[in-house]
Length: 219
Image (tube, rainbow, N blue to C red; front, top):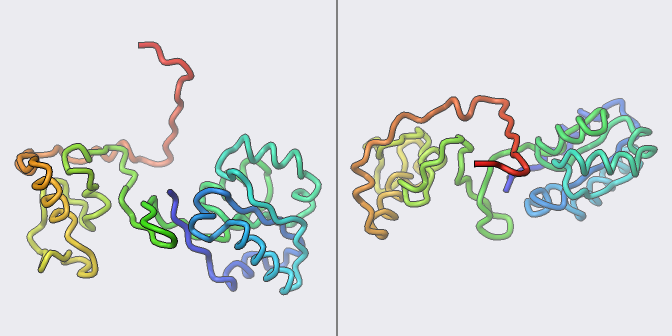
């Protein structure tokens, strides 16, 4: 899940300065769960903007604004309202904001800051558990990602600076490698700690990345 946080309304209004008509787009998926772009948040944003003298041409929640084909279809169906706006305020992640821009050609204003790829613990609580490195080694670390859980991104064990099980970089969090150790111990796989992992292949995470999946892959 992509975790987002809504920008302060004053920052959003600064981005909309001089723009009279605004089309608002929310997201039925991640932003809805994060409460940054669902039906309730889009309705509330509309009320705020109208209260500030903006004309909201429409306020919709799309499924999903990060899907280019979906965006193009929505643009065809609501071209008059969208094209007649000075900007599209996108209440989703940065991917959604980019895709709305690419699919409509409109001036896009992001309402949210995109934070990380995270695990939904429960309503309103999210944990960063994946660093999107493109070189996953969870099979060696008991399902815990050292890149995400260790601020130093250490690949072969802890740094030695942890105190009382807490990270020396951020004492508010558990040492990622202690979590890995305990998980491997419980699974009877502590021998994995003795295996030296090669340096992370950072070429796999050079941006921007693009993947093309063949409809039928012949082997």
